[in-house]
Length: 190
Image (cartoon, rainbow, N blue to C red; front, side, top):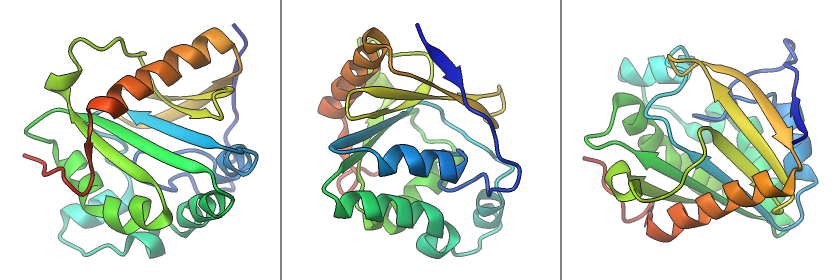
């Protein structure tokens, strides 16, 4: 399998969306070249609790998601304007963690407003699904970007592969979650 570790650019902002902590230039390049579909599966109950936006939210500050993450908003909006379908599915434990509540509260103003279609699947509904061990993005069913996090949810590094067996495994897992998940507009975290 050809799995390639991607480097970090210390000059670039690291956090461009809740639970998406990639070099925005690298991720932007991947989404910029995407022609049809970009799908993202998130399976953790907490990410980057050191993120200033999460800290501000916990302190009770109101967040304007599109202003807080303008790079993310621009990247997704541009892809959607080219007709790329951008879908995100989140598997979450219930009752939800404080981080998942944060994600839920910024999803409408960021992900949905930028053009993403977002769904939520309570973890109890995923027991019989075969899922990969890491969060990922699949672009055009051809390229897989795997996200790695440490035990505390801090982003460590991404890897990418075009190995079609691995891409297919992840794309199939995403679709299985998507089929069971509840659209963001109908999901209410407990």
